[in-house]
Image 1 (tube, rainbow, N blue to C red):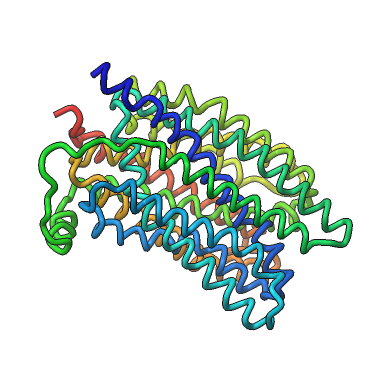
Image 2 (image 1 turned 90 degrees about the vertical axis):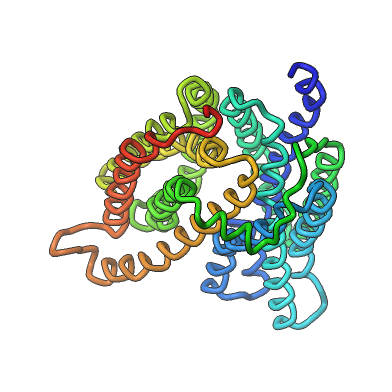
Length: 425
């Protein structure tokens, strides 16, 4: 075992760097940076909202990974497709300055962004399984914690640098140059990211590759009741956590926060997440990812409980507590939902299981947001009243999150903890 550990030590380092670089690219093509591009082109805010949801909808295309699970080795085709995806992400910074009609720009921009997200999601599960197979089971918690810490710290610095570049050129009245610099930057990130994949080793598959047709493989996967019990955790979590999509407007409008205050609190939350990532990882390695998730969901429950009572008079204090607790909870939730697949699913089904998990949970989060949106509008139109009570819409959505997350905790205790881990069999 020691020899194998030495063989893949450098590859594990590459995985940490790869994850950070991929995170930097995702920052570049989302949030305020995406909005800056769409507003320059002249794309409506409603369309920009749909483009932002490509991240959630893109998870649906991870289902394609089920049909690619046995295409080994994965390194070559994952590297190739990742390069195409991130090249398209770089292109969306250059499309706005093309000397073509607005209609053509809009179509080209949307198609490029959509295809990039689709390809990214197709390769995501096979890539995760490739790297995670190189990590010992009793070290997965600490490793994923270290990986997340590097991404978070690097992401804060990268986001600041990206904002500085855009603001600098925009203040000088030359936003087009900012797009060129950012596009070149994303292209350079793509090159570095591709190198991490190229220099990584892939673990030879034990035994012969199962060449059953994809339909049979999918059919077997859908019969796995234990898998769906595990996936339901991610589905419910994405439903409960989807209400955070409405927090931004609440902060600025009802609570009256400045962007500076929100940025500072977000940074405080990131540091809290970094601080608790390793302790959460050690806890998971010692006890189990299932028990660690119960702790994290309990913290998330408290944070949404506090947000239920966040109003303008106590906003700064309660929102700060909410952000810190939510960040501490997220220090374990994201990595644990992936690691649960490795705890409860057979090795030969893990790529398919990861893809199915991302697909179902992604759709759950997206459609929950769509369903809740009319409720937000209804409460606001009625003068921030609900069922005759004076309540802000985000207080009501936090109640929804609070209930869903507590249901997850009960489900974890009485269902998941009774399933025997595959690694312990």
